[in-house]
Length: 537
Ligand code: PEP
Ligand code: MG
Image 1 (tube, rainbow, N blue to C red):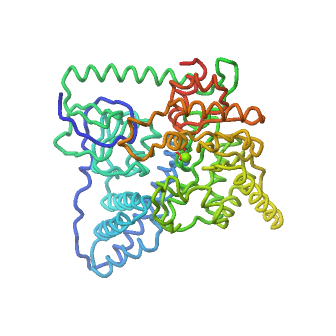
Image 2 (cartoon, rainbow, N blue to C red):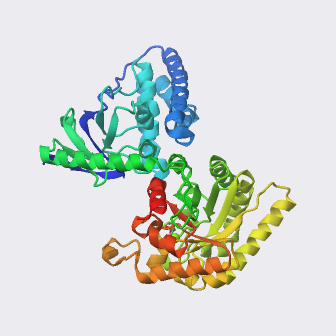
Image 3 (cartoon, protein in one colour):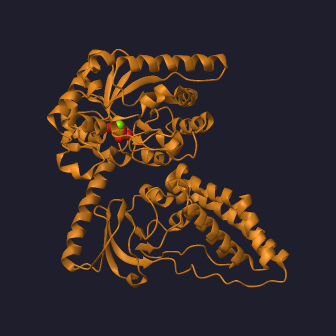
């Protein structure tokens, strides 16, 4: 069977090939005394400007290969190279310790990445790898050698950690996949792997002893099988061929209209958590964004994101989608999504507690800031807004009056803004049951089946021990969906599904029969859903 190494999959798929143990170039940097620190500082400044040139080239390459959004990391690297604290630390070490520039960069890189890796915020922790990357680049330039290794034949790369620049520099036609010991699914490298469509695992017990050995990388089950036996290899070859066939078949659906067998055009949108998912939305040919989980902006911040920060993010998404619909779901914080600076109290039942619209309606300052940003961004694209966790008509009325206030305020301040469609998420049984009353108040419904299932079946969606009871196709749920669609249509509004169930191909026919107008699924599922809508399942 071979040696099986387990890891966490960050992108599915299968590849078979030789392992290349990567990272032999990263040797120890020697600490040499110098009697001319000025000359070392000059060497450092020169290396820095070469690094910035290299990053500009890399940026251009990455734009072509993985899209502008993902390429931005190289702009971030350039900015990091200009960071005062980083530069002061390097100069200080050279001057004070009278040592070589390589050593000063290496020590600064270690210190700064250590500092980032201790931070509470996951986003900043992930930046530790970027600091190491820029430091390694500077050292390579100072030592006059290539940054990163070139891979010359098809291989599965095994490494302690991969920096985004290393991943992009690798020749894509040779890169079959990668497995690393470190790295989070939030890191840019993980995002790049997803965009490059290659299987990848993190958290694997790597070892140089596997270098050059044949292996199967199974991104579906999160396994790397080193030296598999002939039988297993054959099984995987067949699975790979099948996957390939499916993928190629799905490519036919790029650029096609999503028209179901009843002849009705379905809106096939994608769900995103942030700007970094946009490349995947475009690559998979989604027709819009049906759920932008805006809370990512809050989760990534140390404090409430300002109107300006939010405006820039929403504007960027709207502009990138170039006129296609972008539905921004207002802040859905609370329950499992905790943010320290909100100062939320511990609750007995957080899923049924102070969360989402309940926070927005009691802390209007936060809500109004977000609405201002959304309305302003609406001047740059086709933005709609929807509200989570609704249970009553009075809530919707209250929201609409707050939106009106914000509109008036922006007008009075002479600030440009656009009109937005307003919808609500149907994710509580209460909302589904009174959807006839709610329908008259809004422009659309988007059914959040993840929460609707949890509240309808009284099953905590966070508790893995209840998985066997979590019947997403429960008749009660299907009836609530049908009721919502019927009530929406009676009032002349469209109804979509943005929960995970929307991508369940075994239900696509049932949803089409119910008359669902929109499906919003994760970007990688778009083409498979389009196929199922067009052909039935
Ligand atoms: C849902 O509840 O189905 C939904 C789409 O929202 P979230 O998963 O973000 O709670
Ligand atoms: Mg929800």
